[in-house]
Figure 1: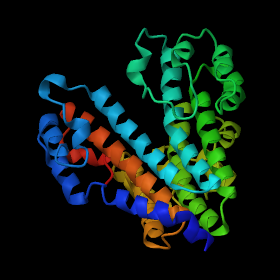
Figure 2: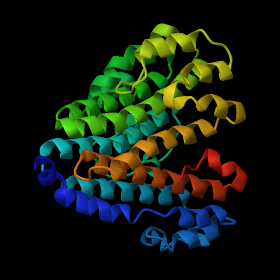
Figure 3: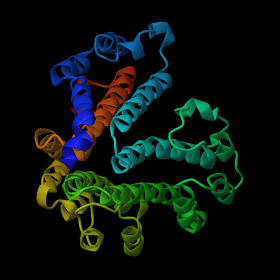
Figure 4: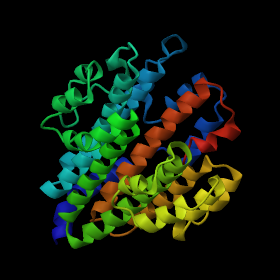
Length: 346
């Protein structure tokens, strides 16, 4: 009865929203478009028609289109949030929505670090998610300490403070960004702990697969590009996944070469990652998303009165938006259709 009361209205709303997601057959038409203009004409025949209504060859602005698509995501998150009657579930969706705020903050940190004279607002969503953040002041700050002060009374002060010394000694943004990501997942885990036992089980399983995918990609990048020591890599392992940090990392650290690196994390449901790496390393993200998608479909096909329906829809919506954005840039830059699988996951 508790689950029914919590999700009766939200489930009906989300099921309707699920029906608006682009069908695979329609997405195939988008993939087959010959160029960016043919793609936009095809998108205008989908539910995204309002976003693309005023776009023409003379007014093509990819950054603006990307912003509109992401703002549409946020509007969907807000609708889902407002359909939930209980604080615990609303807080979970609000925290998921903060992912967009974290990404905006990362963009500004990169602009600040590069010291390039650009218009900050051109690179941001321009929408308040949780906090009124003065991104312009952050971009023009003199020191990381000044940025931390500007983020006082937000969720982002503590993770940046925790990574400050490592950033100052290495001058690498990796530590600041990784700390923000770790904090984001920790806060999601805290939200899940407040759920009913049914919701806790469903949400934890979906989150674990999402985090495993993040960790596998992090591990490959850390070992290949950053050359971090084992102790450092253990410290930056994302929380909430099913992979055991020290065993995965110890295996990883004793390997040499990208194929061996992949083999060290290709365990259980992630075993095919090894074969994908031998064919094309760019297919790894697509495979990891397929593992996540399988769990999402299971949640959507199971008991409708759980957080799984909500969580599953938001994952699918975020991925659809990512696919459309990737496709826009791919077509704009003349990428061949056979190269698209490394960018598009449908």
